[in-house]
Length: 405
Image (cartoon, rainbow, N blue to C red; front, side):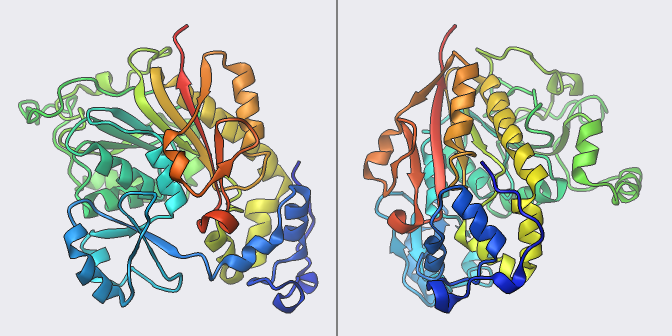
C-alpha cells in the first residue's frame, strides 16, 4: 500500500547527522519508505555507488583515450559486457567521447534488464516506454544491421530526445519511433526484407513513405506551434500513434501509410520477438533521481511520487503497460517487465495480477543472472538489484514468455 501524505513537512526533515544519510529526506518520503517496508539508509549510498557508462561497440580500442578525457580510470563491469564504472562525481557530458557518441550513461542494472531480453540478430523488438533512450540505444546496438526496433513513448519531447540519441550514435537505420500511449499501441513490426536498399520509386506519392527527413513544412511547423501549449498526454488521448522518425531499413520506407497504421487485434504469430516494458514508476530505487529533488524541491517529489491519486493510477498504468506489451508479443517471444522502484506494490504485486489474468504468460528464469550481483525477488524467477548488494540503482526484473494457446 502507498502512504497518502499531506503537504511536505520541511521542518521535520531528517538531517544527515541524525541518520547518517547523504540527503535530508523529508518526513513524508520517510513515511512512504516505511509504508512500503523500505530501508531509508540506502540513500546514504548515493556518493559511493559508481556512475556507469556503456562504450559503443567498436570503440573499445579507445578506452585509454576516453580515460584521459574523463580523467579517471574505467573499471570494467565483469558481469555485463560493454559496461564500465567510473567515480560518481565524474560528468561525461562535456567529454569529446560523449559528444562523438562513443559513450553514454546508463546504470548497469538497466543494462541487465536489456541483456535479459536475449536479443538476437533479425529480431523485431518493441521498447514500449523508450524515453529517455539509453535502453533504446543498447537494443539498437544489439540488433546491429538486422531486424527492427520500435520505440514508443507518450511524451513527445522525451521521444524527440530519443531520436536525437539514435542519430548521434548512428543507430537509427532499423528503428522507428512513435508518439503513442503504450497501453493501447497496436502496430506490429513490418516483417519484410529490410536489409535490401529501400525503393524510392514512390517518393513523390503522398501516400507512400519516402526516406525520413528532419525538415518540416511551413504548415506542419505552424500546426506544431499552435499546439505547443497542449500537454503531450492530452494530445495522445485524442490522436492515433504519430510516427516521428524512421530509419532507411526500418521497413517503413516504400510502405503505403494505411499499411503501417493498420492495427491487429491478435498478433500471436506476427507480433514482436522481444518486448521491453520498463514501466513508469515512482523511481524510488534510482538514488540519483531522488537526489535531484534537493535541487528541484521536495514539493516536486510530493507531486510526482507521493501524491495519492498519482500512485493509485500508477499501479493501474503499470498493469496496463505490461498487459498490452504481452498482447503484442508473438508466441515463444520474450518480454521483460522492469521498474526502478523498490516497492512490492509496483513489482511483485503487478506481476501477480498480470499472471492471474493471463494464462498464456509464463515467468522464466534469467540465465545470465547466475553471475549478476542481484537477488531473487518475492516471486520465483524474478530479480531485484539492491543498491546495498549490487552497487547499482535499484531495479526489478521479470521475464515472461508467451505460450501457444
